[in-house]
Image 1 (cartoon, rainbow, N blue to C red):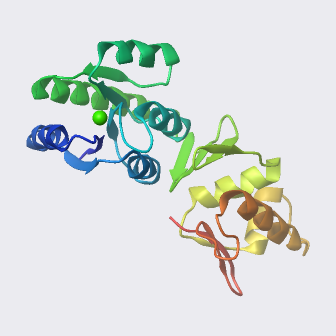
Image 2: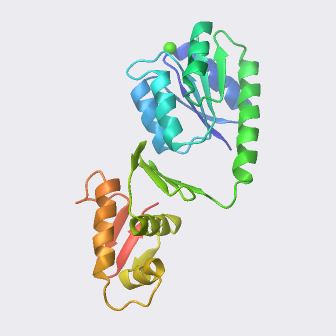
Image 3: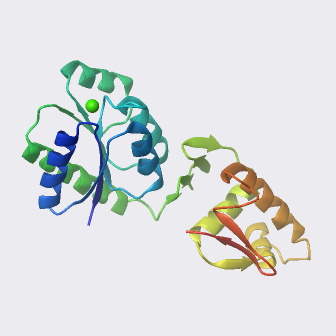
Length: 228
Ligand code: CA
């Protein structure tokens, strides 16, 4: 079932949208504030976002921009003013669609369905999975770029390979010598300290607190594991 997040400060409108979408078989959540809405858009796995433009804390422009940096999911922007829609288009924020209030709920449902269909076709036709997204980390394998909570971070070649390998095999524990062989492509000759050094550098870029890592865990006496 597709999950939809509605970010809308007017409760009556949010509830109406939710009712209609749920009747059409979608799972729907609502956030009334921009801050929490942005946080959940990035850190949870929604399939589509319905985003009001004028919001407390962080407006829809900023949310759309930030979400676009880390997610490809459809974003439908909603505004009370026709002029705002023109402005959104002009800014090229990457929103997939725009609706002016007031709109009929059935029109919203139709657009949501169309965008989800299109998105699912697109994702389904991508060569393998070029994009890895795990809790705020986005790895673009073909472009070899990494974003952490919307901010791009620079990795050396081996750091990138190691991070990507662990993220592609989440919840599995790897010994240091296994990782060394995997990434450095040669028989391990005991220089597994290289792995430790690289893990430390990766953590400095992706972890909020390197003393208490949320992504790459150390399994004492064994090796490392990327937590899903
Ligand atoms: Ca509003």
